Amino acid sequence: VQLQASGGGLVRAGGSLTLSCAVSGRTFSYYHMGWFRQAPGKEREFVAVIMWSDGSTSYTDSVKGRFTCSRDNAKNTVYLQMDSLKPEDTAVYYCAAGPPWRIVTDLRSGASYNYWGQGTQVTVSS
Image (cartoon, rainbow, N blue to C red; front, side):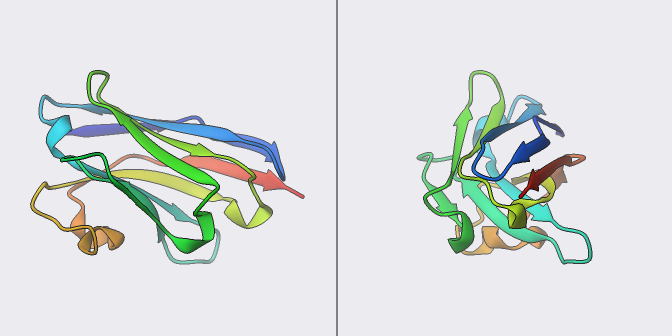
């Protein structure tokens, strides 16, 4: 399985960006798909996950109501729609694929994912 993240860029505070993560491999629909981010000098943190089985989602508190994660299994792609962006959202964003037997609480940890994309930079100016 290979993951390719794209869609990052420079945006002003209050603006929007949509990240995409294209996944190769025939079993995409059976993977949970997560988004993580890492800001300079900080540890990688969980952002969002979308479950393979029912498309349910879970978000870290700081992005709830602003970010929306979705997936298109026909296109082997997962999206992260980011609205009302803040300077503190500035980070490299990574998508990751986790096995179907993981439960949602496990998927807040990067250790629960088998495959990672290369990351895409999001910079939010004030």
